[in-house]
Image (cartoon, rainbow, N blue to C red; front, top):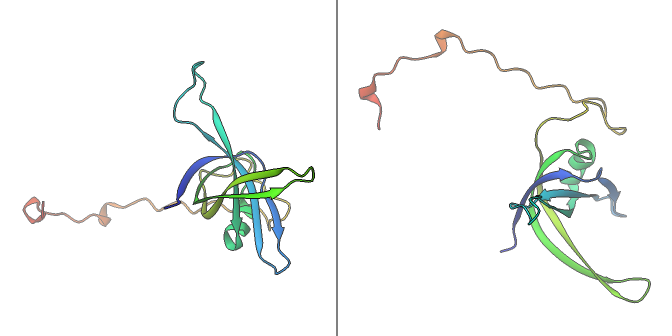
Length: 142
């Protein structure tokens, strides 16, 4: 099974691409802190490249910005290519099945290709005392 779940912060703004057949792609890197500190007491981070396709890519390109905390679920993929100097290069990427923005937008500003700032969600209504039903403890199944 090849499955990875990561939570980290974007190290750069997503780079948007569209294939010749019109499929959206988004590429960005996330910084994921390691679980334990090193010998000097510092928690290092790994910088991992994430590739999202189609609707996931559209979401990333529209809503994600550098520094934003995200959760990524997907799989690890390794590929190779021949560099211009003739050497063989290897690339390891996370292919995102889902990407979820965590927290709120830091700046509250629209990205250049947005239609404007995302309005804040409506606050839930405060419950009134009439919303509660009295229950006898003898009726509970546990």
